[in-house]
Image (cartoon, rainbow, N blue to C red; front, side, top):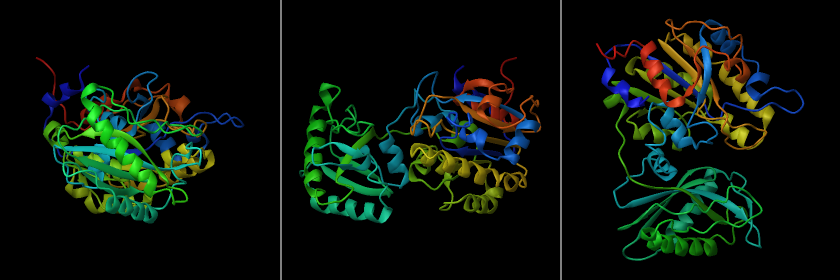
Length: 402
């Protein structure tokens, strides 16, 4: 079914919808216990929701396809992730509120560590702190000048992540990413994937060579990996599509960027679950839809830290009662994708979800976990249809047809 069908069925209402997203929520069984991170966590509040309401599994993109964070979040908000796919560079730019124009090519940067043989030994440069990131970005910005026709902007994002914007005429984004996605090998060249991108390839190759010379004296962040090339495009806003006045409560710039591109208002800076609840309470009366993002589940999974990911899930479980105190008409708790600690990376596995609304038919799920949700009443469905289900339970969809 086309997810845009719901746009024509929207009806006005004053109901409220909360999406609590634990990034990278899904996992795989631990070799010793046989339990996933979610199954191993003590989650009495999520288990209570699972018993009272309905559960299921979501496929972010499609069977067997490992999603990036950008398309997975677009799917969460009811946008076809394939039709609306966009490079992460634009999301990073939106996340830090960079003033984009049509001539911009936006690129997500990972600062990384390369050894003397030119092999990548750490794709995240030891997760350098943001202050070091800021210093290195200034170093690159101050000392790299390409030509009178091409300008660059190097902006810090957070930790090892940065934004590179190349501004000039006729730039293309059909290029090979330089991040090899593994260590022990060299970075890939920014190879043009179509003939029209050859000039852009040459610009980026020149830039990377200059950056390598400048960063040679850095202990950790001595090279750049380029990902998520993107030219500017406009997305239909959530208020235009669904009539929702939406608030995003997220700490990481990339997710604030997704929200900003879809017309959400960005809440205050948040780092802990307690911060999130504080902002939610302050802003609850002014909005209809709330996107709450928890990054640490994904970070711990990517670092292969099973027990640390379990702890984050337990911390989030503890704030569920505070959300319920506000009496949202619909509460969906899920993730954007799976990041099993066993793989230390995003994976293609479906993501568990519990949906709480007084119009739900309770299923027989007893606790919130991957194997339990497999038998839930929502079944296994494409993630891009979650928004339609949530809108229906919020009484914001009319009837289709006569």
